[in-house]
Length: 362
Picture 1: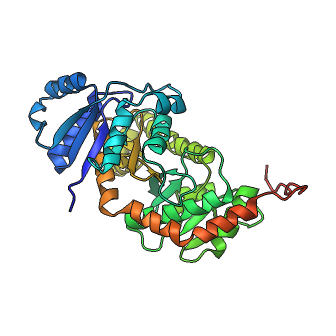
Picture 2 (picture 1 turned 135 degrees about the vertical axis):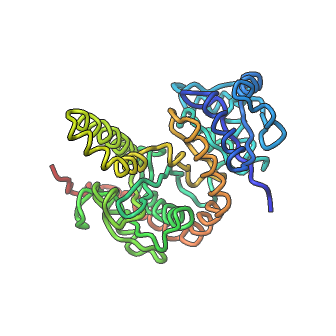
Picture 3 (picture 1 turned 30 degrees about the horizontal axis):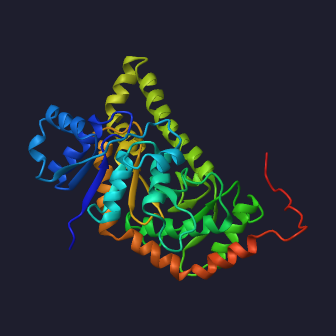
């Protein structure tokens, strides 16, 4: 069995190289995961020395020099095309060559996506890659995708993501026959847009998937849906709303409990519950979001990731390799290739056709 190594973009993120290095050191020391750091070798060595971890070089940790850095505000396509010696590209090339089996970056997410497409390409049969994440649900976890890779999507894209998300929920989250839904503005088949109605129709007739129909926004947090698909624009709004809701709840209760002594005593009695709530809403616990559909394991972490988030993302990447998530996606896409092909052909507008009547609600 091939030993799993994870390539980490040592220069990616708002707090690089300190936090990517610190997270990598924790992954090696606490979980015995092999890590290759990509980036400016001199800076990475200095950071390892600062953290008292130079002895790990050659013993679970390696450095691979990268002469260029992709800044957080750079244009993704330009960075992917011109910066072939960036820490992002070097880490992805390690995956392509087989020296690493997964890649983690908290850097410019658009550049990671664009560079991954150039360096690794898509899994055969995948129409478009999608960013996915398991978010907390009152009944467990719900995989939501796409979270930003595609601002627009056709019905066949959403349908294919449903199968990809199902594989993720089943293999990574351990959910037996996860229920899949398409995010819409109501439960009735007449609701939604041409995009969602098309995806709904495809998934309703698709074999081998536990499709539950439309899911509404509230179903992300409170429902038995284990996979919810939407376009990247809407998905990113959902993700940012969840992040903001977590901060709102934390700050609201902190302010309320500080107003009087009885409320402070009430907090002491219930702090374990609120600690669990904060933990559920803490992005650091989830590490990062996989870019599903890419021919290699790529984990995109939050730009503000600290050492815990980076460590979790490294563990996540290793887990995806262990369960062969990409192999499962490739098999599923191949099995349903005709379904997606016929859906794409049916979606092509006929000459002179009239647009569908809107069913949007106020």
